[in-house]
Image 1: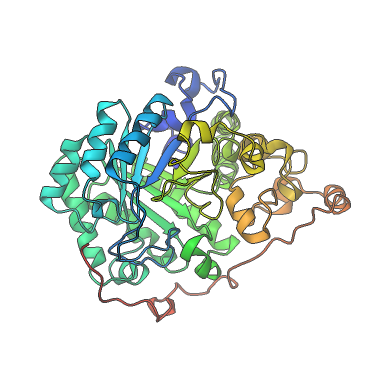
Image 2: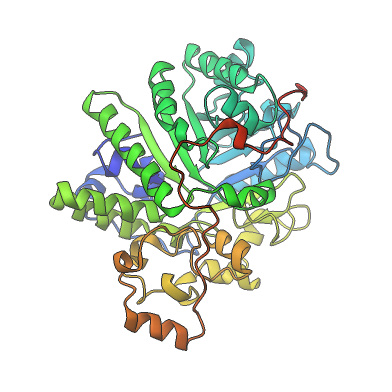
Length: 448
């Protein structure tokens, strides 16, 4: 995660410590003098638990390929509580209840109560459509520290993206219900060509609905997301999207609106932010670069600072690595699986500096220490090699210091991976709703 509001505007937020504190206190961090960091093996991951695969929507980018049906094999209530006890003993910083749609799981609040009783910080990732006034009060009373509601556009844009008509209106109801009971709630949006033209409208929505937090995710090509890789933003469009996010976040800050704005799943954003800030405030930019470098970018993400447990109990490096399991919590405790580096992928993720290749490699990309090679799962999905360059890097060769001499060295190593451009050339007009695949229905679905 890249906190735009903190790094670009100097704001603060409750969750900044998870990204820039590593357990240290604010003054040392804000002064640009980070405290000693833990090793990859010592860190405990924010853990995503997909408590169910069932979902009442059918989003075109869903990494779990969920639908409105019952899937067999979910961890039982007792298995879930045993898992939570292990996670509490392992001292994870937070447990994110996700899905599918987690509110479709009948025992969700029993599981959350177990987590709270053991001192585990629970958060919720939901599509928001099942949140009524009564449900919002249940969520608040259960002790969720944060609720993230996915919204991928305004009105029909969201509904086509989500595969069910009326999803936007019901998600808005969910936002309003959470705000009304004082539940901390945020918006989650995945950037694609389907919603690129909606960005300003999304920021207007955030202000109008008094939403405290928004996370803008880069597309990861897993699950159904792989079917829309061609609708990812072009490199130029990604830069334009970041410009809008920076501009609107700065506007919030200037007007005294305390909004936490973040981008997620592409650590290149931190470098782009730094380069933008360098032109307007060089002294602050250097402090930001120190923070980014200390935080390590992708070096401490998947397999280190983030983990996933799917609805069957399989453990993954993050929620997008569903194609690779390290083991099942039905057979071994999560804490044991997570610290076992016998699996080459787990070992590599905990020591990726020695693994990453091509234009992303240390000594090749001048920003490696701050970016850390970004998202390894995207490299694996595109090249079938988790150590290949980040295919969604939108910085130029010149910007990363990839000189002709370094290019020659990379070719000599056999690491000259072609950088794909999934998207068509940038549009001259905003994307139209008709461009979304007609196979995605705007009707149907259930409230299951």
